[in-house]
Length: 99
Image (cartoon, rainbow, N blue to C red; front, side, top):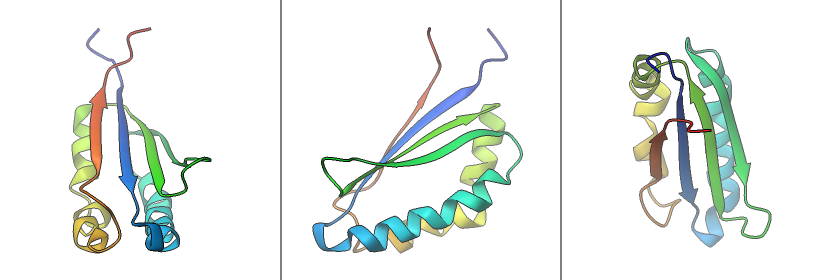
């Protein structure tokens, strides 16, 4: 399958006293990202049992579209903004749908 979409799961864990700040920062990413070429799905989830746990579930038309997203100004600015808000660097994985 050469035309398979790319799925991304990106997990962020907030410091316990920074949950609302991280949530606000991550919510700011949604609208500009949803305007990008190649985005199919871009959703932010918050764990209902652990409010420090946030996960983006994404689907992109291609690696090129995803790479363009990763190079966007709002994503390039993210690492500096995450300092002091998260317990560790985000856990980000790229996946292909199997079934």
